[in-house]
Amino acid sequence: MGQQDAMNTRVGGANNGLSGGEKRRLSICIEILTRPKLLFLDEPTSKTVYFGTLSAANEFFASNGFPCPTLQNPSDHFLKTINKDFDKDIKEGFVNEIPTEEVINILVNSYKSSDIFQHAQTEIAQICKQHSRAVEKEKRHVTFFTQCHVLTRRSFINMYRDPGYYRWRLAVYIALALTLAVLFNNLGLSYGSIQARGALLLFVTAILTFMTVGGFPSFVEEMKVFERERLNGHYGIIAFVLANTISAIPFLIVISLIPGTICYYIPGLQKGFQHFFFSISTLFASMMLIESLMMVVAMGAGIQGIMMLVVGFFRSPADLPKPVLKYPLHHIAFHKYAYQRLLKNESEGLRFENDHNNNNNNVGSGGARPMILTGEDAFKDIWHVEMATSKWVDLGVLFAMVVFL
Image 1: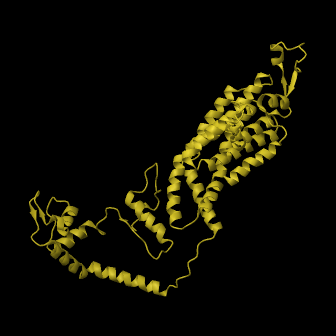
Image 2: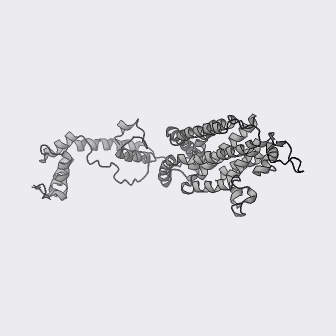
Image 3: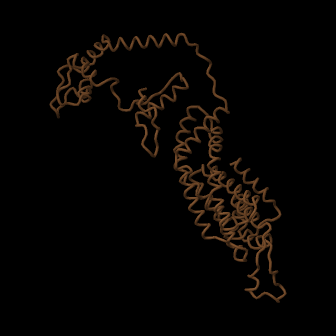
């Protein structure tokens, strides 16, 4: 296909790569690998109208009585010689002395008696001999495992090379995490820190996962390749989705771990590896779930916005209108399970100073609260955290959503 000069060149995308004609020839090579019985080609060589060197073309036309005039573009001369539309060019005053059909016959007959034709016939005969000795094997589709393996490897390489997939998003996440760390630095255990912890965890749960939309342009380009290959019958939807999910896991771990660590330890959230591991796992599950949800590009952002409104931060679950917003949106929103489980994970074992009690002068009224509030009581009272359900059960719900969505 004449692609030797481009063998070490990337196909391209946002950056320069193969030309339009080279991409067309590359697509032909990809299809030839499957040995199809029939290929439908629509201008596969782009604007190429001659296969060979320019000097040979000039010599061929000149030897048959149609030399290229001095200071004239050879391609224009060849086109005028063999195209009937130029039999009488009034604008340039050019008139063919010989009818175009006769010119074409002269060139065809001359080609059949030329050395180029004989050389081509010899090569064709040699190729036919090689094919006659080959035994055509029965064609079989590759297994589902092989499809997933190849697609996973290709998708991983594509995600690694394309900075728009995860590298730029990681840089934005780190910048946001550092901003959050400075804003919520040293939360402490005062009564006001309860509100601050809820705001921090909501931002981590909702906004950081919402930033997944940044990888859409790269995903759209990959979808174009998927549509073409699926229509050609190379693999199915399940293999593509599974491979895309598996290849994204290492990158999702990185963009969950690094910003999550910054947002967790600098503000001074719960100590202990178990609490930290649960928080990172929840963030990772939310990231994976968003990757699946955001495949519906046109609707993903709007769905996330509605889910964030009913998570329980802006209005308590008890105050949400029961039709639609509470039943079923509040209970099917993954933000609810991620946000409330992070709150419960943060509340375990903490003791807050109830200085809010003294500020309201409730002491002696018979209804004064204790000077020390447990984390469970504080978060249940303020954020309506459902303490009856294990946080690990809700983490399992998130991963179940990843599987089914």
